[in-house]
Structure formats: structure tokens, C-alpha cells
Amino acid sequence: MSLRKSISLYIRYAAICVRSIMEYKLSFGLMIFGRCMIAFTEFLAIRFLFDGLTEIKGYTYGDVLLCFSVMHMAFTLAELFGNGFKVFSGIVKSGEFDRMLLRPCSPILQIMGTRFEIGRTGPLITSTITLCIGIAESKVSWNLLTALTLALMIVGATFLFIGLYMLGASFCFFTIEDTSILNALTYGAKEHGKYPIDVYGRGVLRFCTFVIPYTLVQYYPLQFLLGRSTNRVLGLYPVGVVVFLAICYGVWCAGVRNYKSCGS
Amino acid sequence: MRKYYMFFKVRFASGLQYRMASITALTTQLIWGIMECFAFKAIAEAMGTGLPMEYSSIVTYIWLKEAFLALFSTWTGDKDIFSLIQNGGVSYELCRPVSVYSMWFARIVGGRGSEALLRCIPVLICAFLLPGTLRMSLPVSIEAFVLFLVTLVLAVGVAVALCMFVNMLCFFTISPQGWRMVLLGSADFFMGNVIPLPFFPERFRKVVEWLPFPYMQNVPFRVYSGDLPVADLGPVMAKQVLWLVILVAAGLCTWKFVEKKIVVQGG
Image (cartoon, rainbow over all chains, first blue to last red; front, side):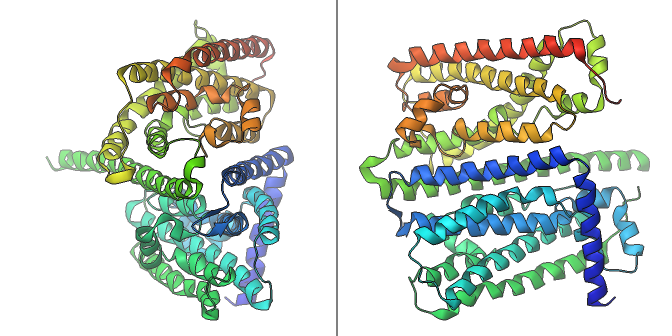
């Protein structure tokens, strides 16, 4: 199927999901508000901590807010688009995946399209606000390159999270049950990624470079963004997520080849 | 014989699945706790003498929080009661010759208690075995430990009473998921789940202390490490009891009101 057709199909899917959620407007509004509030309390916690602090390991309030906003924004976007992978065990168990395989278009498109959940976008409001505060408070010298770095960080982190969801979903092919084995990594990164990773020490920094490449989208581009390093290439590091995504896709394909319907 | 072996195999595999789930839950909690300890270590170093809580107390607080997550977590648990309200199963509950409020209260405490008991042991063992600054410390004194247990029970009472009150409010709306999220999400913050209460600015904390939220996990976890001295505990425990009474009364009144007007939606 051509790319244009795929995109228009995806938009169609998403539009239907949005319309079905809009049937319950109050519930939708409260959902958005609730999630927005929860993200806001996390911001408040940072604000409170920085009442007694000027900087953590050399990072100021504004720097931490930038980090917080990037990770939250990326996580929310990933949840919005990749929600289907998150609930994939349900799709396998109900036999819905069998039907998806029969249709003449990519199962990935169907999974991502049919579970498009607009109600999860609440934190996007909060993180947009905190991003503005972060930009105002931090002493980044803004130019085309730093702006590009920031944008790449958000996009790269989004794809990283989607890759992780895909990896988690691939495990469902072998276990059927939802193992939620990767929850620690996705939720953990959202929660703890609010501080630049070197705050957690060398061990964590190594893990987040060689095992799950969080540093590609957070620590390294941040060094360039905040002017701690003059190496411009660091700003382009988020592009490296493509490699990680390719590996996740490989695992996914192996899973699909291995798939046996679970018969319901 | 072969079919019995197959039964065995299926059951065994599904059992293992649960074990797998508890192992992943434990790993998640350990990673979570360790990361939080690291973050607070950096914060403690940066704050120096201005730190409102000793670092070892913070570590202990974090591990207790992880160990007793099931008791106070506002997200999990009581889903069955929630769905009873949503799908009309509540009409069966009304037929039983017991007080629905007390029955649900007992059920929530039982559910949370059993889960916490199962979960806390491996977390605590790991927390006591961790190296260096990550290790959880023993209670400061025997009195502190006894009072930890007493305030823990009161704290669970307050937490469940609040949860019941929110559940009762769910009767007033057909799509209660949103309300619950708003109420319980903010409760999470005010009870010190994101950062411990001593880190709140003075004036803000003064206001929060008038609310029921600080009388949940905040009290027992800080008594344990001596951050809340045993000598100052009298008024705090009095407030815990007071909030327990108020919340139970509020929940019961709402229930009495709901009971008369109940409209079963489905089922």
C-alpha cells in the first residue's frame, strides 16, 4: 500500500477514535484535566525543591524544567500514538490481531490507528507551559541550531518510547499475557528523566547509554543545548534513535513470524 | 495420564505467569526506589545544611513508600467496587443483609492489606541488603517502631475512608473515571508521594496540614526514621483520629443519601 494511502487511512482511524471519545465530552474533559493536574503536581514538586536549591550538579531550575518538559512531552506523544502497543496483549488475547493480519494493510498501522487515544494528551498542556518557563529561565543562547536540538530531543524521545512500547508488545507474541516488563523503563524514564541523567551517577549514565539509549535524546544533546559542550554534533545525537527503532522493529518482525493465534 | 500432565502444565504455566508478574513488579519497585534515592542524594548534596530532612530518613521514607505501596496507592485496588457502581452490580450488594459501607470498607482494607503484606517482604529484604547509602535503616527506637505500627493502622483507615468517600461520589456521575483521577491525583501529591512533606515550603505546608492528606503515609513513615519525634506525636495522632471520624461520617452520610436515590444503570 502506498504511503499516501496509509497516511490517509491512519487519519481516518484516528478521526473515528476521536469521534467516539467525543461522545462522552464531560468524561473526556475531566480525563484531560486530571492528567494535566497530575503532571502539574510533578512540576510543583520541582518548583518546591528548587526553593532551597540553586542548582543540582550544575543544572539550574530552568535546565531541569527543560528536561522535565521534553521527557513529559515525548512520553505523552508516544502514549497518544503508540497506545495500541501498550494494550497489545488484549489485542492478541481477543483474537483481534488475527483479523488485523488478514486485512491488506500493515498491522502496525492498524494497531497504532485503532487505539489512538486523544484523552491522554492532558500532560501536553502542562509540559508546553513548563517548556516555556524552562526556556525563559534557562540561559540557553537560542539560535537555529539550539532550537533544532530541542525539537530533535522531543521527537527522538517520542520515537524512543514508541520503540520501547513496540518491544514490549513483541514480548506478547511469546507470552500472550501482559508482562509489563518494560513499564519500569518507560514510566521510569518519564518519572526520573526530569533530571539530566548524570545527576544519578555514572552507573545509571552507562545503563542509559548502552542498554536503553536515553542519553541520546536527553543527556548528550542537553550538554550542547546548555552550552556545556561546544561540540555541535551532540545536538544531532537524537537521530541515533533510528538505530534503536530498527532493532525494535526487527524484534517485532521476528515476533510476527512467530505468531500463533491463541484461538479465541 | 497425558491429559493430567497437560492440566498440570497449563496450571503451572499460568502460575509462573503470576510469579513473572510479581518479579517484574519487584524489579520495577527496586529500580524506582534506587533512582529516587540517587536523585535525593544529588539534591541532598546540593542543599547541604538546608536539607529539611536527613538523607538517611529520606532513604527510609522512600523504601517504606515502595514496600507499602499497595496500602496507600490511590490508583490500584478497589477496582471491583468501582465496577460494581458502574455496571449495576451494586443492586446485588443492596440485597445483602449487611451495611454496604462497612462491607466495602472491609473489602478494601482486606484487599490492600493482603497485597501489601505479600509485596512488602521482598522489597524490605532487598532494601535492607542494599549497599551503602541506599540501605534502609532500622527504626530509631522501639517506641518509634510501636508508634509506627499504630500510626500505620490509623493512616490506612484515613486512606480507605477517603477512598470510600470518593467512591460514594461516583454515584453522582455516570462517567466517574475522570473525577476519581482529579481527586486522587491531587491526593497523591499532598500526601507526600512525589516529594516528602518536609520539602514543601513552610506556608504551603501549613495549609496542607489542615487537609486529610498528610495524615496518611506521611505520619508513620516519618515516625519510623525519627524525623517526626515521638514526643510531638500526640497532636498528630489526634488529628489522624479526627480525620478518620470525619471521613467515615462523610462517607456514611453520602451513602445514606445515595441509598435512597440510587438508580441502577445496567447489569
